[in-house]
Image (cartoon, rainbow, N blue to C red; front, side, top):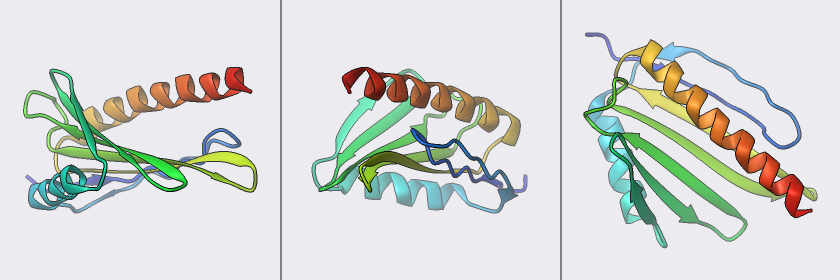
Amino acid sequence: MRSRTLIVLSALFLHSAQVVACHNVTAEQILAQFKKAARAEGSQRSETEVMVVFTIPGDDSTTFDYFTKPSHPAHPSNALTAIYESGGKVWAFSRAFTAGDCEAFRTLLASIEAQHEALKESFRRAK
């Protein structure tokens, strides 16, 4: 099966924009990103039945690195969202890759986007 990547870039909290395209990526590249996230300083791991999420704090950002487990229909896939402040506004940058099924991955990204909407609302309420 041909490997595919779905890349999504979104600037959240101010504007929402997406660029979607399929490209090549391998399961080995996703595994390398998994290992990098696991080793990152301050990385905290959480899991569901179908996902592993690393929360990685930074000086001026927080990164959420999502990885599918073999039980997820889009496996192997990785989606990363970095939330940061710039110019007094809160932004998010997202990028995502899959070596699995693109349609299942689009469904996964929609669920992650719903989580982003909940984050946006919590930021609005905190102000």
